[in-house]
Amino acid sequence: MRWIKTAPGRPWHSCAMVETPPRPTLQRRLGLIGLTLYGLGVTIGAGIYVLIGQVAGLAGAAAPFAFLLAAFVAGLTAMSFAELSVRLPHSAGEAVYVRQGLGSPALALVTGLAVALTGMVAAAAVLIGAAGYLATLAPLAPWIIALALIVVLCALAVWGIAESVAAIGLVTLVEIGGLLVILAVAAPATLSGATWPASGDLPLAAGSFTAAVVVAFFAFIGFEDMVNVVEEVRAPQHTMPLAIGLTLIATTVLYVSLVCAALGVAGPAELADSTAPLALVFERATGLSAAPFAVVAGIATVNGVLVLVIMASRVLYGLARQGSLPAALGHVWGRTGTPALATLLVGAAVLAGALTLPIALLAQASSMLTLTSFTLVNVALIALKRRDAQGTGGFRVPVWWPWLAALASSGVLIAELWRLLA
Image (spheres, helix red, strand yellow):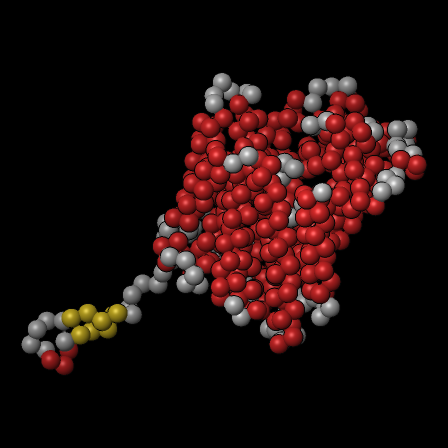
């Protein structure tokens, strides 16, 4: 509401109160299927196409168990996020959780910025990979390809959340289809056990298996991106926990099946040495060229950039709506229902990072920021449960759950620090 002056000479009516139109807000256009596909898109991404080789090289025949343990560790924090998304259904979720749980606006702002930075850093790393791959198919400099990609993806992100998720979902189905083809062609060798590593090939060093779990853990990250689109989800109290759970179950089954199939066709050392281990599996199992899978991997990288741009822009939007960042970043374009300025800012930052920073540094920074935010979010849930164990109803985890999740997240963080410093 605001006051305006009326005609002079009307002392009792020198001002009039008029209704001002409400600020545009995000539109709730995502249902269970769309949100689950969004989660699968950001979780599966392009990494699994090469990650299986790294895990197999570290854990050998124990690689399936490494993925199972990583799924357990990730699942603990995933369910904490599921409860928090019901308790506090707002964009910039991690910042809201820390603010409400720990009562520190400054720490909440740092957490929110760290999450946004994680998304932008990860997107920059993926953009480098996408540009490098496409540069082998088109006679263009990688920086030109990166620029063109980020312009197109930002335009799609600004266009609308439903349109963006439709594109993400379509590409995700293509990714999953490619992985299912791998399972189908490798199944005979896997079931026969002809080339399965012997039990004596299990890693003797505990550190090797621990390193494999750390690497596999990052194949399950994605649920923290899902909670940042909660303001665009229909019936989030029911949809968010269910979509997070479905995403975790689907990825666990898919990853464990894939690593079993890969080990049934090729040895751990071969998988580790290959830059495209699943393409190697396809070639070994069928005798055909794996070129189509290279195309799928390239598409997957572009899909990952779009998901991360959407997530980071929603974090900046949420922080602006909380008053922690300039209000302009919290503006929603009425025509599309998306935070256009925040999206464009994220796109510019992603492009700058992709053109100036090495991919190894980007990946390490993303890992450390993610684990730190996971630990803080679990500690925030511990504090919220101490004050109000039941909340407002809906999905809840046991009181001891966030303690175990915080311990697991901090443990993976310490293991990753040890690996980087060793």
